[in-house]
Amino acid sequence: MRTVLTNATLIDCVVAEPRARASVVIDQGRIREILTDGRQADVRDAAAINLNGAYLLPGLWDVHIHPDYLSAADMPLAEQVALFGHRLMTALTESGIVGFRCAGAHHFMDVAWKRAFDSGQYIGPRLFACGHFLTTTGGHFLTSGHAQECDGPYGFVKAIREQIKNGVDHIKLNLSGGIMGPAWDRHWHSFLLEDELRAAFAICRQRDFKVMAHATNPDAVKSAIRLGVHSVEHGYIMDDECIELMLKHDVWYVPTLAISHLTPNQVGNEWEREWLAQRNLAPSLCCRADAAADVHAHWFRKALDAGVKMALGSDIRPLKDAGLLEMGLWSRDGASPWQTLIAATRHAAAVCGVGDDLGTIEVGKIADLIVVGANPLDDINNVRRLKLVFKEGRIVSDKRGAGAG
Image 1 (cartoon, helix red, strand yellow):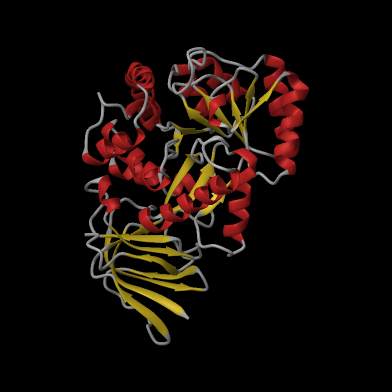
Image 2 (tube, helix red, strand yellow):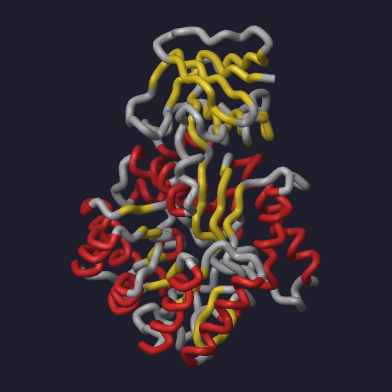
């Protein structure tokens, strides 16, 4: 049966102006017709839903995620896999996040959940998997459990082949250190040698797999771009040449502001304070984040102003909160609500390779949609006022009677 959404205020993420009194016709999971200026769709033999002026927009995305960092001693593997699926499904229904790109998960739990969602076995978001993230011995964030240590050119080639064999969508390489790690894991240090870098990127090119690169300093960023990276993650420290190369090579940038910005000295609203109280970060890690925050914000804004292609990814948990917090941080660091919304919809779908089908509200696209109670172009945090979530045109979450605003 067709579904007709009537009396919507449409934010299609194609043009920046909301359009009032819009109707959207959905059939067989896709958008078949869009009518604006009060024109009425044919509702015969259709399920009509009057949105009463609420804001209809594409579902949100978070393109840098991990499962919870738990060891086998903390929780058995089977329970960790179940928890990850629960977190993913909750993010869809509670926050309207319809798509995720994974940046590292042990035991290929991301591949397992991707297959479960794609098969229709469970109702969940669209998931793009990478398996383990690959780094050197003594590389970045080994305590996460999601790392696989590799050494030498063939060590990286073999590991990448293993990821491909197990059904990943893209390859995640940790080229440098980070903010969240032990004393020897520093974001201004690069870890891979030149021959390791060349071999890793060569096998990815040969097998037609995109590289998602954790690159946190100018050396790592520029090496990744010159070797053909698809997206640069973090970019805590960059320089003008990094920006120039991103533009020249049409590379995506996913800044993950949450990693450097969510500390007791920086939190700025109730949602951030609540998240911080739950996470209970070690003081030493908060100090490292505080020290990195201003430089990170500077290069984020430089990239944004230069027109670098940017998508929204959080790199924090829980997944139902992470993307929403990251959107607020984009706004705090100078992005407009429109730039932030595009990064979390149209650009996020594009970085995952599905921009032709998702990320905007256009005729022919898949109807992964959300409805919110106030205009996110006035305040990006209005995406939190969730009323409805649609996946392929079917309601998967209905909060209209739950005081969602």
